[in-house]
Length: 228
Length: 378
Image (cartoon, rainbow over all chains, first blue to last red; front, top):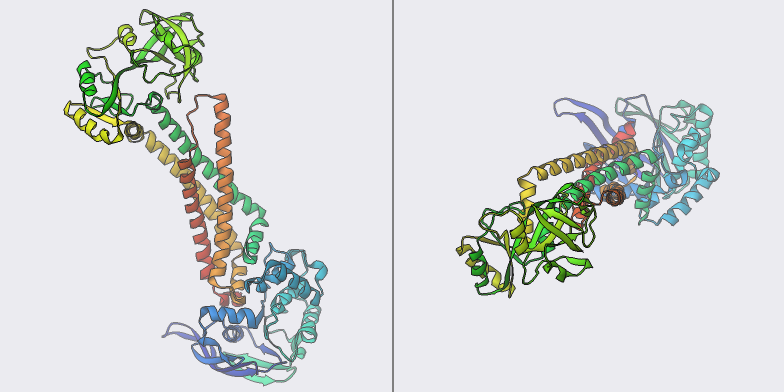
């Protein structure tokens, strides 16, 4: 097991006027899994994703990642944990428009204080893995949305994290491109030593999941294998 | 330079529009600040030109004197009294005043006349044409070859003129360390001739110039001169008093301070606003970096490095532009009172540091406030 979440609770607002985003959620993720968290807007998917990736502190509950209790880490330890153990692919990719693709990909290694040369060399290698080596020296805005998505994936995997987190990865993509990307991730990135958690409400890609958690009103309503 | 700083530089350099706006903003701020402070320094230096040129260690004067513009005559007995003070190596009289010169062309020209001690010629200019001994000839004057020399119709040895209905003849030309501020040419002559040819009051000595035997004697000499009812300033004290007079009693300092402040505010607002826009444009990306695992100190390092680079480049270009402008202006206007000094450069650099600190502060504050969770929420 790579991740275990127990009795997670998160609310926003004041003590008197609480709005619960996550209500007593427990689940676990195993190595080799491609877990989807699905549900309608406002169901608490993104909040849950933020809690298990060490970005948003829960009001109650615990998260263990590789047997380490996540929310007992201090700020710097948490930043290091995210940097070395988690790869993020954001919904809007958040690539720096003023850097080339390879420079964007190299950023996690640069934050790990690796040298510029080493980071860029690794950037080329991972862009080759996602099939974009020939586009490495172009800035993101010269790439198609699908290509930008792959640059973001290369950035997420360059530090070889055990856990990859994708936030709405196909939201900006057309159906075919979305399927291609997820298919690529499953076939090339997922391994027995990694786990991938994907938050999505795109039912066109449900059949690529090994397991699907369906959320509604901050609770996990169902846990299914494969497509709903 | 580490890899993170390289990323910071690329983010900065690749946004050419904002980068050049930042550089030009700071450059113009530095240019204006340098021109203001250099002009001020130049004016202040020129107002003290007589003190610098005559190069006496100490000056004795009437207690009412605030600056070299004040010329309050001292009775002769004070000179004798000063000479008798223990610790005084020598003391000589100085005449300093203005005279109306009628040139051979018939034109009149206001002139600064300096009468130096007949016995020692203390404070004499460096002779570049002629012989200093010629100053003892009848009606002899030495013209100072500075930027105002041409106002005397560029006289040569033997050129005659009238000063206060007395004949004068140029017996040599000389140079001094610094020209005056008010654009009048300078003639040197003997003290005795100056007080004979020029209208004077009952007392004739403008200042007494003296050198002490030892610097330790200065305070004693001051005390003794005070007992005589007069005051003594060392060269530096006189220069400082002169500077303070122009700075605080003429409005010149206030105007320069206001203009420098305006230049600073312009630079601060242009740089601060552009830098803020630069940070805002990349704000979500910096938020994503925080989510990925960038620490606060990493982001602060990036922002401060960018601000420092912009500040240093803007400062360098600003100093270069101001120095070039001043040099070009001096080629066309030899009397242009503007001097770039080390303190001027340090002062501008200090103001640029404030601009850089302010710009980075508003950028860093914004970046530190963004929560990685906001990136997920979109």
